[in-house]
Amino acid sequence: MPVVGTGGHVDHGKSTLVQALTGRDPDRWREEKERGLTIDLGFAWTELGGREVSFVDVPGHERFIKNMLAGTGGFDVALLVVAADEGWMPQSEEHLAVLDLLEIRHGVVAITKIDRADSDLVELAMLETEEQLAGTSLEAAPIMPVSAVTGEGLAGLRTVLMQVLETAPVTSRGRTRLWIDRVFPVSGAGTVVTGTLVDGPLSVGDRVEVMPGAHPGRVRSLQAHETERTTVRPGTRTAAGIAGLDRRNVARGSMLGHPGEWMPSSRVLATVRTARYVNEPISRRGAYQLHLGSGAWPVRLATLGMLGEESMTVLRLETPVPVQMGDRFVLRDVGRRLIVAGGRIVEPIAPRKGRDARAASFAIRPSLDQSYAHRADALLEWRGVEHPATLAAHSGGPTPNEAVSTGPLLVASSHASRLAEQALSVTAEFHERNPLRPGIPKASLASLLKLGFETLAAVLNRADGLVQHGSTVALEGFTPTFSEQDEVEWKRIEKALEESGPTVPRLKELEVDPELLHALLRKGLLIRISDDLAYLPTQLETLMRQLGGLPSRFTVAAFRDATGLTRKYAVPLLEWMDRRGATIRFGDERSVGEQVSVSN
Image 1: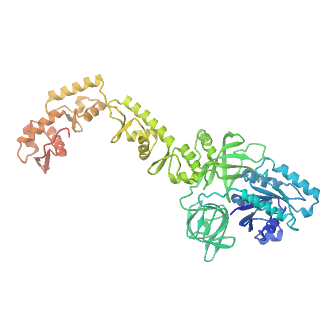
Image 2: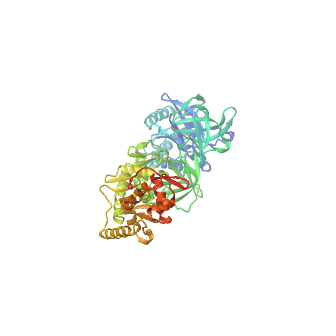
Image 3: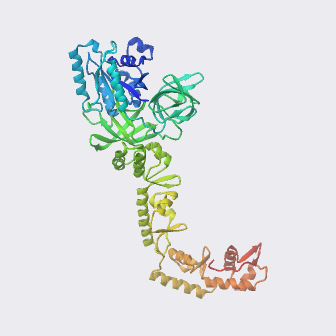
């Protein structure tokens, strides 16, 4: 169901024209009727070409431009109104600027009040309007003279509107999104919110949340055009009764969606284009408001450079706002009370460094006019690694086409390949620096690559030429190698241990290099029995054979006497044998256990 939105200068006949087209007066407030001036958004509907069409009527007075902007977020087709007896006026230009900055390309221009102007004046208004439309998103819009009072031209306007509606693109079927423009309590229905459902379906019984703030509720009732509905489709003016939603937690500008599908952001990267009547670049020192959907939020700007006629800009918001790639917005200069620019969200989480933000603009921007899946691919390609829920919320898309799943994360295929190459390089450098070690610990590799363990696992699965040995990673075919100096040092250590007998020197006394010591232990050339004692395997085999001459139950003293060791050697040796099952301890006594190999 499409939405037609009006635009135009104050008192050019927007509301009167909507009433003539629909039979319904869009002005809701008594003050509006008394003053003959639209102050807030008005709503009406009718049937055109066999389908229902919603109309959103916006105020034309410059004092109510914020109210006008609150209604533009759900427009599919614009109905720009210019009075024949006054012609093009300041708010005609500003409203056209809004439609142009939002890139609304489907519309009709109505030259109204032709009953008050002669044919020459009507012709002049049409020519002037055609000139003003040139170069904007509505430059191809048909221009129709009409009188809402006499009815002249109304039939033609309806026909043209139907034709334009037929060519308007189908409303997106993305995630449920309703920008709220009215809130009021209704007995028995809870808090009622109204707005244009711009994306996704909404059904009675749905669990929803209102943002900012993620305030939960449940859809108790739905209405569209004063008719009860069980489900509402995108492009529909909707009234939803929400049970469990505190009226104080929702206002114009809030957004209603399904829980978990949206993730607000307070720092976004966007492309920004100035309105055509703005001759100088936008200064970051100005006071601006960001108008998105039906909301308005204070925003600070940081311009990073130009991309043709657009600037790359970081928008910093005081309040996190639910945005996704491709969202269009308008910027209003609060001091001048003027629409100065508009733009499009590129990356919902702007990089902190300006250089990275510029790179993100070049990487992501080309995907904005493509499908949600392509947007998701581009965003994941830029971020490299992301949670699926976050990626879907920010891109609006499903699982990307080119992604590697790593449990709770997604990794871009190309990024995973690049990381695999980095893993190969880092592992090779580690081998060069540490030739005695079997490989780089996975924890160290993950830290150097700035990855979690699950992501590292996915990367290693794509890394040809790497092998995993428990908690380490090595190049395929790599084996630790002793240098000539290592061999000499090992012979010195071996000789010292052999000559000492079972009363070996302490490791500190041997002055063994820690790297060499660990390599000797891994190779089984040495066996460590305590923090400061290590033996040759043959020495331990000799000591274990001596257990056979001991009684079925023996003490430390008996073992000490049988081996000729002092207590400071006998106790750590027996504790080592206990751990291996060669001896079994019963309080102060032990018995001989299984016959085990020293190397096991």
